Image: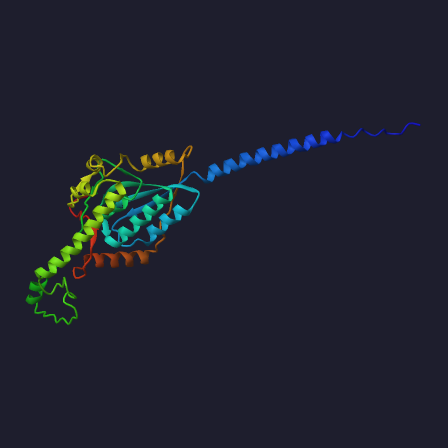
Length: 299
């Protein structure tokens, strides 16, 4: 007796298993390709940290460098420096953070803009490679401490200051009187020591001898091309050249994604900060050690 609507033969178990295996292989292949695309999309980043104007504080720049160093998506960092320098302490703190990043294995380059002098160059010297334009103004490896003597003016207007102090040097640099030779010698020893720290930092960062740096560490300003001839700069070129070189160094294929953050500062905060910073810089009665090149006459 024949069955109505004969049943189709079921495929053998081996064919089922083969079919499932092919599906799994296809899914694994797609997953691998997708993963590779994702990695290429998230690991082609270069972080740029801007260092501009007078350096009076290091916190934001140090935090930015540290953030980029710890971010695995950032393949390398470029310091874009356009600064005549600034206070000694903040310059040294940024230098140390750059050196720490370099020692961690993450590539960090320095790209100089119009000016990267004194403290600006101090920071750059910690980078793995330094780029400068031929006309960049750099160098100025020196230290300055400025005081004003207003004794004559105060006498003319009948102002007679009364000073009470504990400690021979507590009012050193006071604008109310002339500086003694003993005080001058003391301050000169401080400036000389900080100058030596500058020389040693550049020698260490650039991997050249202290004697070689000392020859040109007289505060002289240099063009980018002159600095290159003295081994203070590695390559001529602007920001884009440094980006291309860094991308090639870390193995980025195609154009890298540039991550460049700027601090959000309200207008009132900006006015207050600018006013306070300028008053501190211009106030002659406060002893302030600076890695700064004064460029009032150049534009």
